[in-house]
Length: 430
Image 1 (cartoon, helix red, strand yellow):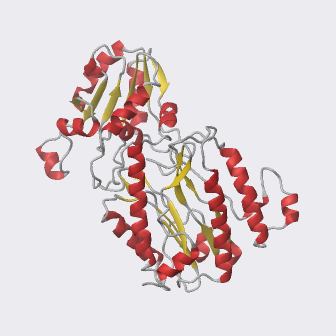
Image 2 (spheres, rainbow, N blue to C red; image 1 turned 30 degrees about the vertical axis):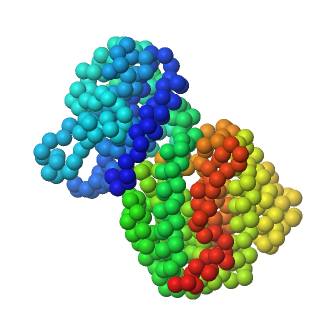
Image 3 (spheres, rainbow, N blue to C red; image 1 turned 180 degrees about the vertical axis):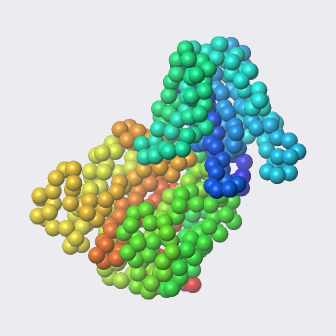
C-alpha cells in the first residue's frame, strides 16, 4: 500500500458499531475479494472487499474475518484468517502480513492462517445460532462473475444446512454512510490530492493537447502523492464528448474553442474523491459557454445548501429540478409551454439534465446507502448538477464532495478552483 498507516481505532470502533446491530449469538463472516484474471497469466490489480476493509483495515487477498461478539471465550470474538506466507511467495510476490502486523493494523488479537479455518469454523458453528453472510447488494451492481463471498455462501450452507442465515449487507448499508472523523480525514486527503492534480492540469491544457495527455497529468500527480491512482475510470471529455455521461475513451484532440469536462477523483487508503470541473481549452470561455457554466454553478450552490440533516432524497431531487428548470428556460433551452405540459415522471428539464444530483461517497465512489433514509450528520455526498447541450457540442457538469454536519455542511473541495473567472485567471498564469 502507498498510503500511510490508518489508526486502528477506526476499525475497532467500526466492529463495535456492527456488534450493536447483530442478533444475539450470531457470527458474521466476510471474505476478501478475489484477484481477478485477465488473459494468459495476467491479473487485474487487487482491490479489497470494502466491508472487510471497513471492519479490519486488512488490505490483502485471501483474508477472512469472523466476528462472534457473544462467543463464550474472548479468543473467538474477533478472528482474522490470513494467507500464510513462505520463502517462495516472498520472492515472487513480496511481503505479506505477519500475525503481529495484522494485529497492529486491525486491532484484532487472534490471527490464524487460512489452513486453520475449517477446524475453528466448525467449533464456532457448534456454538452459534445463526450466521451473517456478506454479499454485494448495491442497487447499481451488475454481477456476472461469482465472488469469493458467493462461493463461501454455497459451501457453508451445504456444510451446515440447519443454521439460520442472515444478510450482512443491510447492516453495513446502515453503518457505512455515517463517516467517523478518521474517515473524513481520509476523504479530505483524497480531495486534496485531487486538487493538486487539477491545479497541475490548469497549467498544462492548451489547444491541440490530447485528452489522454490530460489523464496522464492527473495520474502522475495522484501517484506521487501516495494515491493508488484514480478512484474510478476518469472522464476527460472535450467538445461533444462532454455530452456522453460515461465517456471514458479519452482519445480525442482538445480543440481551440471547446470546453473540456473533467470528472476525476483520487483514491487514498481505499477512500475516494469525486470531482468534476469544466475548463476552456484555450483558457477563455465564450459568452455562451460562461452563461451555461454559471447556470450550472447557481444550481450547484443552491443544491449544496439543501444537503443538511433531515433532507429527504426525493424531495431534494425534486427541488433541484425546479431550480434547473428555471435556468434552462432562461438559457432558451426549454419553453414555459414544455414545462406546463410536462409529466411528473418525465419533467422537461430531463432533456438537458438527465442524472441525479448527488450520491453517497466513501469506500465506494457510489457508496452504499438507502435512498429512503433522511440525510444525517456524518454523511458525505457529491453535488453534481449538469447541463448537456448536444446541439452546441457543450456539456457542463460541476461537482464537489460535501460533508453534512449538525449545523449545515462542509465542502471538502472548497479549495479547488470553481468560479469561471478563477479558472480563466489560473490558466493564463502558465
